[in-house]
Image (cartoon, rainbow, N blue to C red; front, side):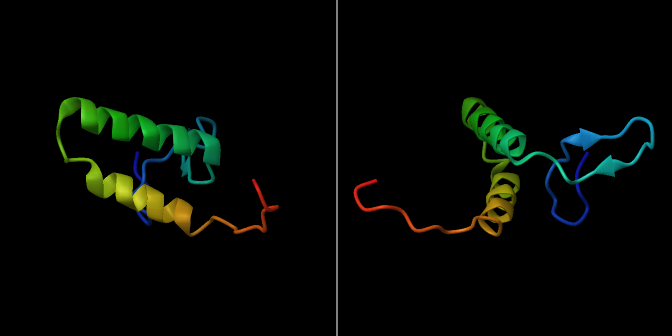
Length: 72
C-alpha cells in the first residue's frame, strides 16, 4: 500500500475499519527504508532510488535540530 500524498509505503493497516493509516511509527519506517535500500543494492538495481529519496525527504522535514554538548 502506498500513501497517495507522499508516495511512501504505508506501514499500518486497520483491519476493523479497513482504511490504511499513515501515522506509522518512525523507527519502523526508518527500518523499512533501510530494508528497501538493502534490497535495491542486493538486486543491483536502481529501481527503488526514487522511493528511497522520497522517504528520506519525508524524514528530513521532520528532524528537529538540538544543541549538542561540546565533545559529543
